[in-house]
Length: 170
Image (tube, rainbow, N blue to C red):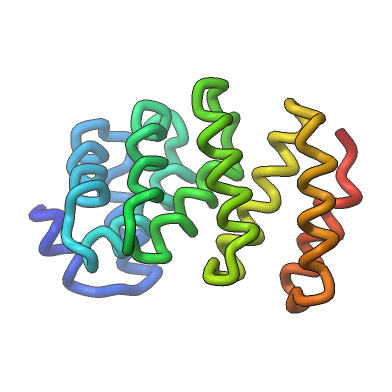
C-alpha cells in the first residue's frame, strides 16, 4: 500500500480505522506513518494525525520512541489543529516521560491560555495538566487559578471538564 495515496484518498473515521488496522503493531509501517505525520504536506499531516491517534490506542508501545518528535511537531508555526488535538489526546492516555514533562507542561498551559486554541485542545491540555500536577503538586495552584479566570468565559464542554479537573484528587 502506498500510505500517502491511501491517506489522501478519503477523510473519514472508517477509512482512518482501516489504515490504522493495516498498520497494526508493525513498527515499519508505523514509521512510514510517522514520517508522513512529521514531514508530510499540510493535508497529509492533518489526516495522519488522526491515524496516529488510532494506532496509539491499539498499540501504545509504538508511540514511545516518537513522543519527542511529535511534541516538536506541535510547536511548528501554522500546524493544523489536528496535530495538537491528536497528540494531546495520546498524551492524555499515557505516562509522560520525566524528560518531556517540562515542555508538555508549558505547551499545555499555552494551549489552555490561548484564545485561539480549539475546545478539544483546551480540554485535553486541562486533563494533562491535572495529571502532571499529581506528579508535580506545585502546578495545581497555577492550573486552578487559570481555570478560575477562564470559567466565566467557558462554554459548556469546557465547564464540565474544568469541574472534573478541579475536583480531581491528587
